[in-house]
Image (cartoon, rainbow, N blue to C red; front, side, top):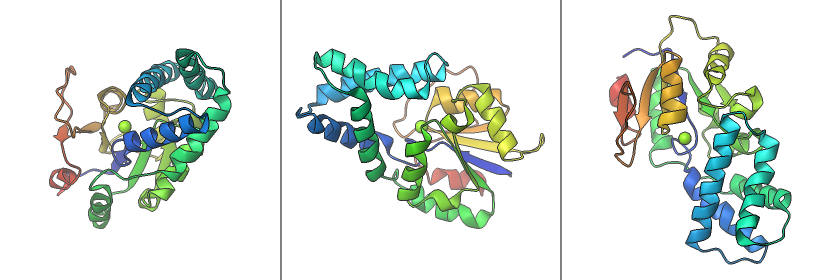
Length: 228
Ligand SMILES: [Mg+2]
């Protein structure tokens, strides 16, 4: 299959966000003298997912998200605190605690000789996503890094995919492959934009999409089999 662009999601596709987020959350709680337990993370995670849902749907702004997720968590604890400070602390740790998904660096090194330009298209906040990609040592593989906060649209909003295509100066006839772990944000969004899709599905989940992803892989290196 010949593609003119490979567009990667970042979190939980190339970067192990779940691992980073657990560390950042744990250290943030310790910064307010709270010893974290597993249940706290699950509660925070659920709140964070809801806040991101509101952000992606345009109901709240990125600035509101930063405050809201920790103020809701403090409400859950019944504790006073400064959610803005907690978020800043969380971001600091997140930026320092970056891990690649297994096989990500090997994949990018194997892809480079194919000469297909690559980009990152990530839902996230610029102040954390760019340093994290740099710290992971993979930013130099990409022609462009598109961060949703910077362009004002979040996946799966069609505006995100349209603006990404414009930024990359993609031609109508170009073949684009979007590689990502999220059925909702990456796969459905890219399908609506008319792009081919590769669902990174390391846990072997099932899907109920109206139309199947073009490809499904459970390990990153399987992308090579699709492209060569
Ligand atoms: Mg992702």
